[in-house]
Length: 296
Ligand SMILES: *[C@@H]1O[C@H](CO)[C@@H](O)[C@H](O)[C@H]1NC(C)=O
Ligand SMILES: *[C@@H]1O[C@H](CO)[C@@H](O)[C@H](O)[C@H]1NC(C)=O
Ligand SMILES: [Zn+2]
Image 1 (cartoon, helix red, strand yellow):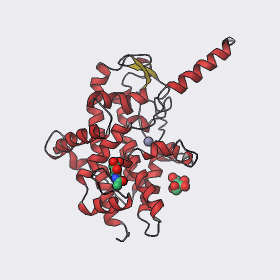
Image 2: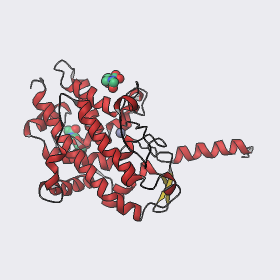
Image 3: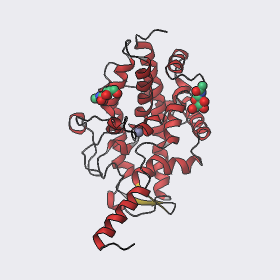
Image 4: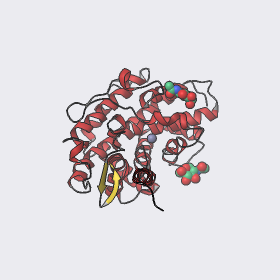
């Protein structure tokens, strides 16, 4: 088929935008690892509450639903939830990073507002079982999303429009942070891979490299102030956009191979953010379980 030049460009653009991976979150590996870490730290009462809400008595009760929100957003019924996966900080990396709730969370919503909304729903004793199940799945997912630096950045749609290569495969910067780096590090993306990574990070929190810092990760967590709590998580992750994601600006990564030195520099940040997300999710679910008026 022949196209006039402008149509060819449009067709090419459509082809590219259809073939590029369009994930907008940590890939399944990141989300499931965060969920497994959380299940390693929650109290027995929290575990029992969420196993009931999620109708799953196995040790994978959180991990099994951790990516549900990323499928739901692409359904007609779930389209309203698409803006809930991120907060588009209108900052200026690498010169200046920062998230401002009033500036960056639009009326359609954002991840900070969504954490507030679905946490409040979980605390509402009158919420029906179906909505409670959905609210739990959203909270589990969004606490993960907010820890991915490019979910707290507006530049080029959170890096989705920054085309790069990773180990010789064409992709985009957002996908590199969501999936390529974690999957290269762990060597897979199935549920058992996530469980294995979570076990390693759980040990690092309990007795290893994160032991001294882990308690400080929980500072400022306040169930009565979900916006204040989660905007801090967003600000902390967003700082990595200036420090590690785009330390020399966008032009330094466009069209570049990121599977080498870039990968090496990103790995410690990704491991830290996944560990923090899991540890904080455990505390958040514990607070919900303790503070909620839900009866069992
Ligand atoms: C619990 O979740 C795991 C992980 O998704 C799944 O393999 C298992 O079938 C679930 N069990 C039940 C009873 O739904
Ligand atoms: C809160 O949750 C409800 C139910 O899913 C949803 O309809 C509404 O848009 C959400 N509001 C915000 C601000 O996230
Ligand atoms: Zn997401």
